[in-house]
Length: 170
Image 1 (tube, rainbow, N blue to C red):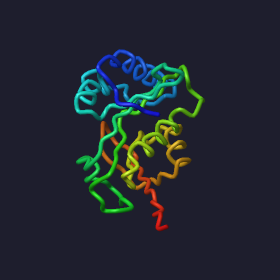
Image 2 (cartoon, rainbow, N blue to C red):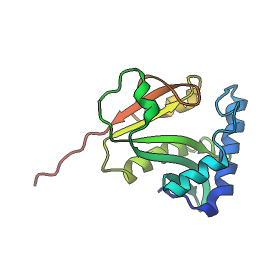
Image 3 (cartoon, rainbow, N blue to C red):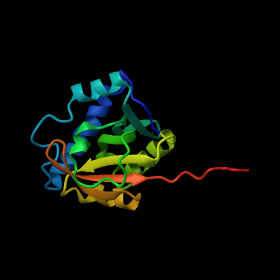
Image 4 (cartoon, rainbow, N blue to C red):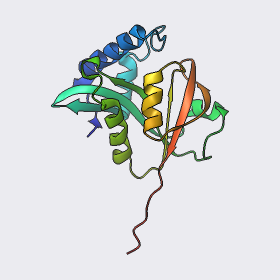
């Protein structure tokens, strides 16, 4: 299960992000290549705001994401159409999985942990680089739908997943 990141996790988180950055570069993607984003100051800010989350595997930090609830201003400028006009949703940014555990479906696990941790929400949104086929595959497999293009560190494909809650009327 994901847990809130602590300042003591910062170095391990940066190692995971740098590992993911190198993996993206090896895939020929310019995502996270042209700027210092995400930087240690971005992660530190996430931790201070209480929106940084880590995924551990056998006690070792292997994943990171910023999980933000509420309204994401960049998503208001979508070229396309969201599935709903809801303005209270969960956004996942800066998701990174260590290349040391690549192929173990831990990106999917991080997302399913987000769904469980934020189970009061039914609307989840994320964006990714247009050429990041691996992330797009994960999102599609998890039931996210492509809704259009947003500008977030460049042009990104925006995805949304709506979860239907089953009420227990016994």
